[in-house]
Image 1 (spheres, rainbow, N blue to C red):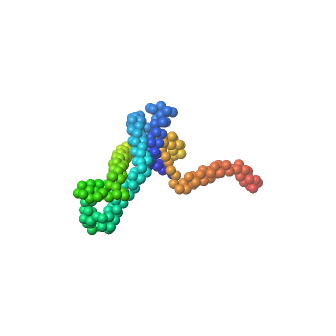
Image 2: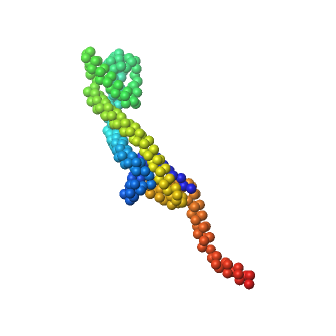
Image 3: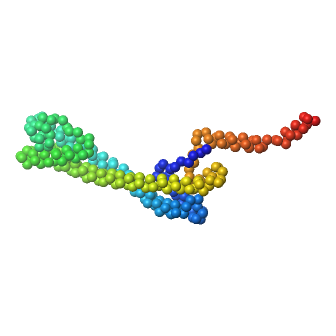
Length: 259
């Protein structure tokens, strides 16, 4: 026999609750297959649940739509920071600057490697170090580094920092709305379980097939196990074939043989 399958997505949950409410347009509310108090609870709950789902989807969409611009600003900031450090090292290799100047930027005196900039927070951290270090070095009489200049590094790092903060805000919004939907989801599951139990109990007096038809009108979903529907169809066909056998002709043939 088929078994009922409770909804496991937000869309399916909303569909199940809407089905239970929409049938009241065809049936008097007090003649529904479930209690009127449950009807009122669903009617009050559903708009809040749908709003939470919309807010979450909108937050996800907004976060996704901004990701392209964010990644471009990330790419440029990483490019300018890494290039500035490379130029600094080239200046030291050519003898234009002493190795000690690396310490202005928070880099070890004899380190020739470019620090890891894979993490967004590390990129912001190193951008700030370069800007502060270049200002301090030039304030002490050093010549500015060009190609890229620290001004270009600052512009691109600031652009990325703004994008990073905004993206974090979007992520926080998405997380907050996701948690809200999860709270409503738990309540929705409880309502649907209570609803389906009441509806099935109401139609217990009917045969299994008629009961399923009536329950389906209320949004209950039944799923057949593999091969069950085919077996039931074969059984029905066998019963029909048995009922349609030429019983009368068989009886007459038996009488003729006896004569």
